[in-house]
Amino acid sequence: MLYIFDFGSQYSQLICRRVRSLGVKAKLVPHQYPLKRLRDAKGIILSGGPDSVYERNAATISKKIFPLGVPVLGICYGMQLMAHLTGGKVQRSQKKEYGPAVLELAPGQKSKLFLGLPSSFSVWMSHGDQVVRLSKGFSRTAATSTSDNASMEDSRRNLYGIQFHPEVEHTQYGKEILQNFAFGICKCERSHGVEELIDSKIAQIRKAVGKEHVICATSGGVDSSVTAALVSKAIGNQLTCIFVNPGTLRKGEAREARKLLQDTLHLNVKYVNAEAQFLRALKGVSYGETKRKIIGREFIRVFDKSARGIKPAPSFLAQGTIHSDVVESARTDTGGKTQTIKSHHNVAGLPKKLRLRLLEPLRDLFKDEVRQLGLALGLPDYALWRQPFPGPGLAIRVVGEVTKPKLDILREADTIVREEIENAGLARDFYQYFAILLNDKTVGVRGDQRAYAYPVVVKAVVSSDIMTSDWARLPHDFLSHLSWRITSEVPQITRVLYDITPKPPGTTEWE
Image (tube, rainbow, N blue to C red; front, top):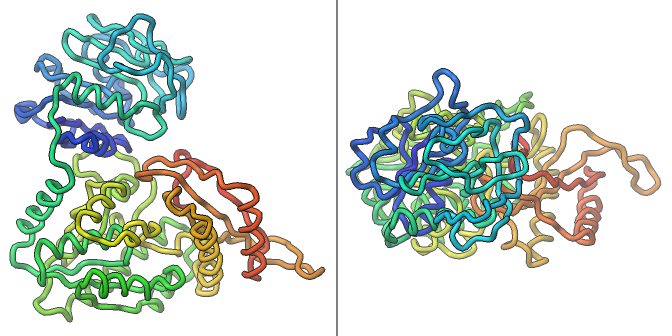
């Protein structure tokens, strides 16, 4: 087991996920986790975090962790904390590093952490502090143009620190670095993978639920479909799925989703058309965060009302919450200090006194892990690779107030985007692709006459877990054709834009 101590980084669970992808058992724990419970630890990783180690009340750990004889890897804040607690010095950087940097390994270094790697490669930085003086026994193993001590180690005590993030996709050889730590330094053994994960999840569900009845919020999306299949496998006819149509779905979505859930997965599904209720609640609301919370509130009202007509009376509400939802909503299971990016309707919109207890079996998994789980559970390929869709639906892709006419305009534009990318054979190349309708109209021309209509933004992203992503480099001719189709077939749109912002600093959704 590798233990990851969480100091509140947006990427803490991602470290855990990357380690698990290597076939190594990993557990994310709060930074206050008792050291006496580390008896099965083969290694320890200290995550990043938003604090500065020299500030009062900064998240910390006991110095006794270092003499345990267990290898320790500090990442970003974890490295700074390691230096701070062992006698080094950390101070605010004159030049902060956010984004890509070139790591230069120290000449002659023989670190096991960088075994087999080139002397120079690209890494992802996200820090405002740096280690300016190493502790006794440590040596510098790498630097960047702005950080002399971008990596350090005390090989005698098996203590390692890196200022960059090996867990994010933007770091070259990040997987190899974690692999070197897990196998070369910690001597971990490989676990049995996804089948073991399914058995573990089923056991957890059965233990939590017992003989009680469960309703599952299903949308036909990957996350909720895998959740429903997993819960169904665990408890069988103790499950009833509820599919709510909030009026913010994509074109044809309700029909396709019901076909998947009922005809393919053979689930017991109760359909609720709540379009009028949701649009009424959203009337006059333009701020995205408020929309999300309203939608979360209305979903719970629908589920609560629907549950009253189900016999036997359900005690649990199962949701397809995955870990990127939890992180961006600043809700963690470890007490970390994660910052709120945006509230997800199934996380931050829940009332404190929910009549139903929550069941979220996927909340510690990322999208690629969910797909692997779904594949092992027998879900069809088309369902697993269905376009990810936010719970609030098109309501957060309509910038400004949400109205039915705006939703209908966006539905048509979004359908064209998806059709063109899929027809070009590019669907598997991207994590997500969709359209966003902006609020302010813009001047255009149609048939020699002035037109005053909406602009639409097209977005396509490349990612595996959506914690970080890059914009898709679509060919100019393709974008030109796409723009022509949208403006020709959707008369309420006069202008097409393409979003080239990576995450960070942007997020996948605009609201």
